[in-house]
Length: 306
Image (cartoon, rainbow, N blue to C red; front, side, top):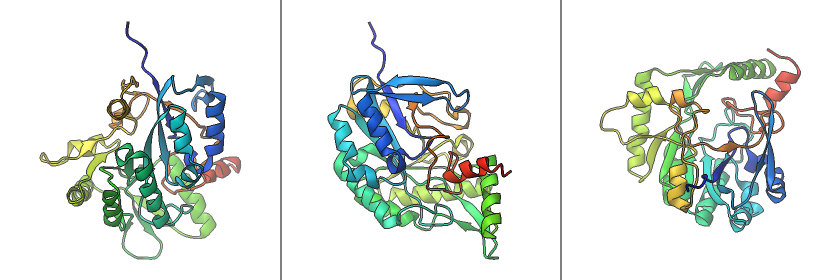
């Protein structure tokens, strides 16, 4: 008789739990359950969590400082949880990502995570690639300036995987930009590069990463992937990958594809349980391009700014 697969927790696509809600997360681990609110119909589902029912926890963060300092990973491992880390480290541009620690500190965190848990359990996300313009009359800008340096450091730490995608221009990002531009008396807008330009950028990244032993993966870029050169070694990504978790940790994790994610755009993620709430757990990084719910979006919604 086939057993049911063990669940995978995703912590979280909705907010940065390691950076801002680690106490809340660890408290619920101790309680043995999470109450998960569906972001669309607002229904609440109780999800029991234990080392016996949860195969792995996939963390997403831009700042693992608190996680490392309180030894959260070691505590979770002792409780029987397998851990995987998605760590977004982009170029140091405060306009785009205003509330992050210095890049040097984040790279130190990457080194620490690799040392503690193994580099094979970490995906370095350089995400998203942004092209943008400001009102300083200068040329169009992008956030690729530190890419080669970050790649060199990641390779030194044993990281073998880099995940990327291009900026997606959601309506709420436009509202966010409008508000910030009015508040700061500054014009900022994102540009969508042509397919040829995207291909050129991605192949340059692939070529450089090949010298470091890192493989490049695309996240939710189905059209771009289909247009890449035939000899490319770039792969489509699964940010939550049950088959990879099974290889790393053995056991019986869920391996079915999650069609509730952006499958039409090329998302290949495995089914998982996303914890956290857009409404109750706003992210304080306040990144301009964020698709989730930065704190500033909560303020805009409350003040009914359109």
